[in-house]
Amino acid sequence: MILPGKTIGMLGGGQLGRMTAQAARSLGYNFVVFEPSPNCPASQVADQQITADYTDIDALLSLGKASDVISYEFENVSTDALDKLAEVVPLYPNTKALHICQNREREKAFLKENDFPHAPFEIVNDPESLSKALKTIGAPCVLKTASFGYDGKGQQKIDSLDADVNAIWKAFDGKRAVLEGWIEFDIEVSVMVSVGSNGESKIFPVSENIHTNHILDLSIVPARIDKEIRSRAESLACEVAQKLGIIGLLGVELFVLKNGEIVINELAPRPHNSGHYTLDGCATNQFEQFVRAICGLPLGSTELIEPIVMVNILGDSWENGDPNFAAILEHPKAKLHLYGKSGPQKGRKMGHFTVSGKTVEEAFEGARYLKNAL
Ligand SMILES: Nc1ncnc2c1ncn2[C@@H]1O[C@H](COP(=O)(O)OP(=O)(O)OP(=O)(O)O)[C@@H](O)[C@H]1O
Ligand SMILES: [Mg+2]
Image (tube, rainbow, N blue to C red):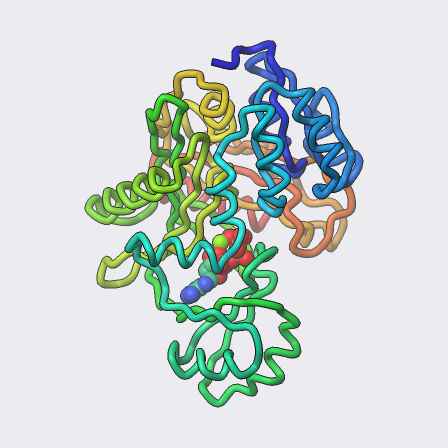
């Protein structure tokens, strides 16, 4: 056990790092964040920020020196560098899991090798292979960069077999990519699994996720799916976490089809946006659970207190001046969370709010009302 009073080192200083730091500090841990941009959201609540590039091995080793345990909220770090770090300080989740999840090609290969349900895919690296893959996969389909994609960035939907592959490849400007079959899902859900260092695991309530312009817009909890689908989604997520040897958190994004079939979309070995509802909705939130898991503490209860809906607040809300935060603050069942980011930009995640209710419909109604008011 790494007990309170010790120091947690975190790679990445965005909102996930910030909320992890808040949880760590309320448990009495020290927190050092490693992030290239100064005054990042996490540094505002951490004890210390190491401001350096993720490729700076000396700086990474100085994080190792300052920390008793290390984790990451940002996936695009070289696992070669992290392997060096893991020799001097415990690092969770393991770098092999990160290596798989940080790259779509490896992630898909992992799902395929282990017989986990996934969308049909082909690897593409030039217009010729794209053309060939398009014939195999069929249309509609979606081209996704193998690495560095998030919030739908680095993605291009292809609607027809006659699409101009040269133009797509040129506009796409990608090196290596995955062409994925389009899944006509009924509903998107995600499952957060937490695993402690003794192998104990706890699942958070399944969240139903609604995306707008490829960015998570709303999470509705509990997801409006039947019991049997829920339990299959949970088992699947646990099996993946086990296969990856996760200690910490794993977010599993899933598509649920009309016929009840489940397809895994993506994996994230860290806290996840769709788990933000846990801050106000669960006995233990995903960030505290993350800290407990990597520090070897007993895991907390993941029980849902009340149905709840989470709404992301994007920079778009500042288009006509400051958003109407008062509406949220005045609502008896709503909670506001802002991430301390300056410069609201279109599509940038600035914060979120939650609304709880006696029923999921009531929470959803409140969320819709406040989203409009904002
Ligand atoms: N094969 C697909 N079929 C249908 N919809 C898809 C497919 N791939 C992606 N989408 C839609 O686009 C959204 C974003 O895709 P994906 O999760 O792959 O992107 P991302 O850029 O990694 O996003 P993030 O990391 O923010 O989750 C999905 O949640 C889903 O709504
Ligand atoms: Mg995703």
